[in-house]
Length: 126
Image (cartoon, rainbow, N blue to C red; front, side):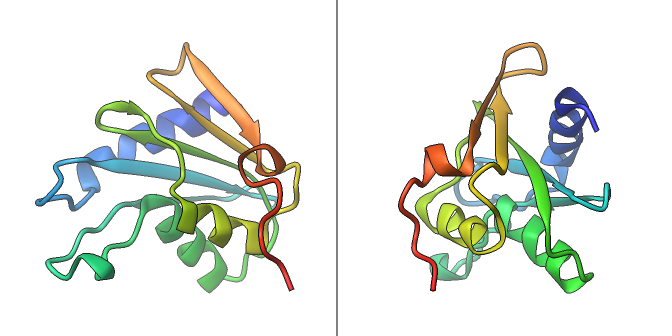
C-alpha cells in the first residue's frame, strides 16, 4: 500500500474520533505485514487516564485479530500532522522493529516519515 493511501485512510477516520473534551481528533491507519490495514481513533474519557490514543487503538485491534508484524502507521489530527505521544511510542516499540515507518503530515502532498528507531532510539524492551 502506498503511503499516501495509508495517510488518506487515517484522514477518513477523523470523524469517528471521540474527543468531546480536547476537540483534538486523531485518526490512524496501521499496515500489517499481511497487507491488512487496521484503523483507530482517539477515544477520550471523563477519567482522563481512561483515554486511549488512535495509534494504540489501531494496534489493539490488529493484535486482537492475530496480526503481530507491522510495516507502517499513518497518523493525522484535526489540526494536521500528529506525532505519537511517549506512551504510544513505547507501545509500538513492543511490536515493531527499528525500521517500522511512522507517516504524518498536514495533507497527502506534504507527508513526513520517520522510523521507529528515529522517534524512539532507546525504547524499553525485555
